[in-house]
Length: 75
Image 1 (tube, rainbow, N blue to C red):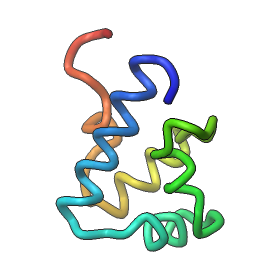
Image 2 (image 1 turned 135 degrees about the horizontal axis):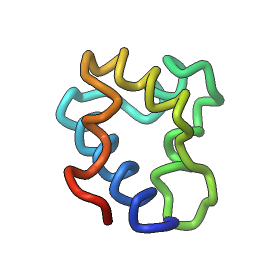
Image 3 (image 1 turned 90 degrees about the vertical axis):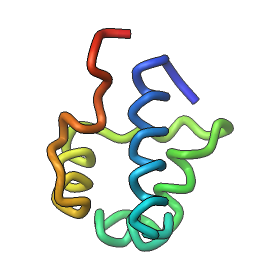
Image 4 (image 1 turned 30 degrees about the horizontal axis):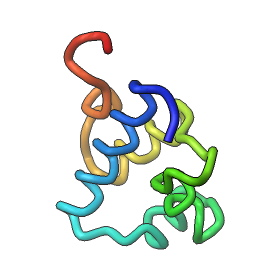
């Protein structure tokens, strides 16, 4: 997937996405990305990652803070 911090953030977004019952395609479309974007980010075989702007937009969609995706302590 990537570095430990990237993996942590990706898994945190995925967990929140699933709890809110938002599909990968729906989240991708809400971000204005291709319908496969979130699928690529969540795949261990792809190099796609969320950037800070993506996380800010996801926080708006999930009605949370962007810091909610980050670990409490440095990894």
